[in-house]
Amino acid sequence: MSHLPAALSQAWEPFVLVIGLLLIGHVAAKDGLFVAAGAKLAGLRGGPRTLFVAMMLLVAMVTAVLNLDTAVVFLTPVLLHTARARRVPEAPFLYGAIFMSNSASLLFFGSNLTNILVFSHAGVTGAHFASVMAPAWLTSVVLTIAVVGVVHHRHLRGTASLEVAVAPRFIVGPGVAGVVGATLAMLTMSQPALAVLAVALSVISYDVAVRHRLALTPLIRSANLPVVAGLFVLAVSVSVVSRQWHLSEHLLAAASPWRTALVGTVAANVVNNLPAAVLLSSTLPAHPYHLLLGLNLGPNLSVTGALSSVLWLRVARREGATPSVVTFTKVGAVVTIVTIGVACLVL
Image (cartoon, rainbow, N blue to C red; front, top):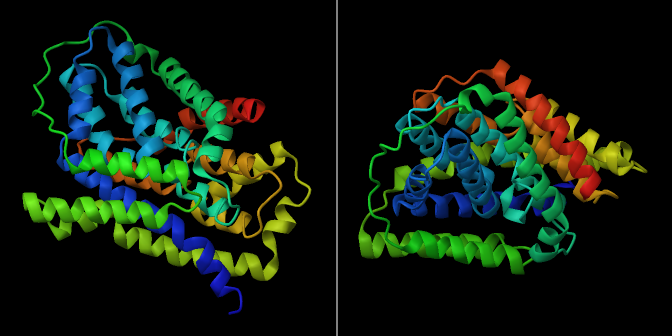
């Protein structure tokens, strides 16, 4: 039990942060931010390739600022609806949504829970973290677009209809204020969780008091509170075990950057990247940034590697898509190998 306080100290912040970001994402979605951005890009002239690249860049930016789970939940429907409206095959957009969400989760602390789990007590500011990770993030984004585009090149041939529905007018509201506030907190603070949660509660309070718009049940559903709570308990439990048996030291002691990334990849796909992050970082490893390459990019190998993939499956099926686990693994294996290999070189 002596390891429980340390485990709680490591685990609480990332889960508080992701709840705050998901809540901000919910308000931004109610403001029409994601639908408006999708509609703007859907109106771009050009063929399916142009549309695909534009949509992937949108996913990358939302992932970086508002967390990969937020991007998956709110942008997967936007990408599917856009592809259908432009009368182009939806497969590149469907799989691109999840692969890009994982690949683009390297830039900020809040982009992925694993980032904070690994750096929970490192005293690194968000700006420094972003400056180190920026080359690997940019490389991963570009390579993910390239790999998914090449694999689905037949679906991205030809022309796309420009007869798209007109999106409701977007009005700058509390959702945008929340996005700006969260971004500033993640860039300037080494432990931004409470600040981001405060921003989320502020924009929600404004929306409830002034607009009378938000309801409790949709908020809980958007934040995936039961799932997050379950993962928190799992993370704390794994952290206690890891500290008791000094597992992170045994697995990563004297490991090279490449081996560190490989261990992170394997662990993420065996036990999911969140418990893997706790397991491998109860003591800060020698190469924490390379560990995150494995933990963040590695889950593109299997649908069990990250919470984002589970959420993606649920949302895609709800929207009438038919995602295939086999296709995910076949394409994801290429995405994983290429992005981790090149990212290790540029980090």
